[in-house]
Length: 462
Image 1 (tube, rainbow, N blue to C red):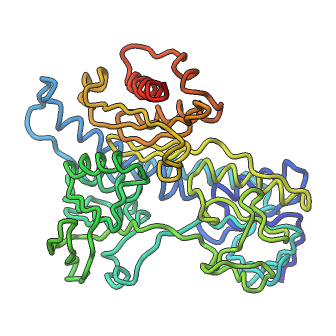
Image 2 (image 1 turned 180 degrees about the vertical axis):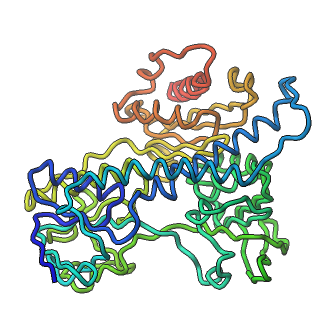
């Protein structure tokens, strides 16, 4: 049995783990990175990048099929070759993964260990059957995995998660998407635009991450025009029939509907990967889900030198947040017992749908109703949006009554991913609505819609 001594052991070589490793080394500590699965990060292998490749193909198909509205006519029918679509997705996905793997390969061999890790006690890890690691501090960065309810597990390989989509060699004909969160909407719309017959079945009225009732209602109407969308469906039965699945569900309108699909894509949430870590062997206090109770500011679990970062803590499953948390956890692990809080950036969330969905700062649901005013703009008659025939959207910006500071926004609309960054910067700089309106707005750009919303808020403040 190989016995290894190190200052910091990092479990998981994803975005948070790699960031924690680099931070610990920068702090002058010895560190070892332990990975039991494939290298490449969730983002590169089955998350951000392959999904955007599929979305890019879907956008190309959508533009081609809607060009006639501009007087541009394509002779014959637009033909979507599913095999070519998936071949490019996998080819470019593998390229992104190779960059991450190359970075891991460049690390010193003594700093890497392959195998599944579990705690023997607070400072001792068993890795596979071949090594034990004694660490002064441990960073848990094991990521998360998709939830698969028992009803769908019984369907075998006809029930899939988003990871499985990117292993397809061809596009199927019919897919039911379970879940109307970000992943469900993004993949559902992309597949629909690529010619797949899609039904997106939500359960609790969700439309992506939106909490503002007016914006959520508008978004529901937009997506209902794009594919079969049931935000409040109750699935009663899922039965495998050969290579198909028969679903029976009660629709949002109370109607019982039956449908046959090639696959059921389950996008019903994710859970932290902590179940196999042997946390019961430690002195750490665990919550009802088996997750270590930790300080959200320092990422430290209890009073022990154990830190939890990235998707594994179940808070902000976003790449940039995982990188920030990994850096903080790695630094705190190296400097333990001297720990510092994570330096959080302005909250920002984006769904890469069309129109895009974005949220910045405080959610509408978390604001005290009497504390803010709402500035509104519809993109339906916004100049540049109408020029491009991308004029579906509604934005709400929230401005604090007492300080006149911009505190948050929720919206669906064109170029949402870009406008979201402008608003996140404004929020982080603690700008007032008046200061934001003194900023330049070129003409004609979609961002003029944001100015309209800010002006509306300023009028309401007066």
